Amino acid sequence: MSQETVKIEAKRWTYQDYLKLPDEERYEIINGELFMVLAPNLFHQDISRNLEYLMWNYVREKNLGVVYYAPVDVVLSEENVFQPDIVFVSRDNFGILKEKAIFGVPDLVVEIISPSSIYNDMNVKREIYEKFGVKGYWIVDPANKAIQIFTLESGKFKLHFFGYETGKASPKIIQDFEVELEKFSKA
Image (cartoon, rainbow, N blue to C red; front, side, top):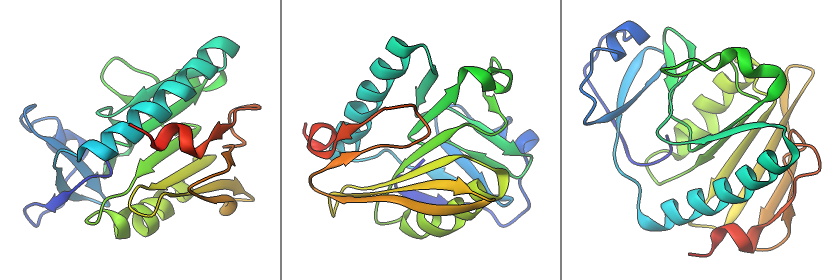
């Protein structure tokens, strides 16, 4: 999840270790390293809620799949367990949906960055999402009112869209979905 993160104990963590952690806190495992995820600020929450609401209404109306929002576990591997801010799973990909988590590669992941998550979200997680074959990756930057939309092409993320304050964002992964940047950045 893209809020404040705190690295924990230097050992190799797996999903099995993750399952033993207390439910009161939120965690991610990135390349075998455990990070505690602190609560986001209210502006982050506003953006997450608004974007998830717009995306979910569209996806539901068109019967394209499902949209989940944090906290939801995405288990890409034993050593990569994330809690993205927003996740879209297409109807064709429902096999990855299990009772406890999403076990596999979602179609689209949205991360809303914070000062402590910039490096992980823009570099480390981006590389991992690309490696596992996530078709679309959004990086939302509340501080700069900007968004980057990446689309997987020939196994590599290509910048599909960059927007700053105004304009229409389209993930390309969700058929014909567009959202005006101003609509999801307002409280």
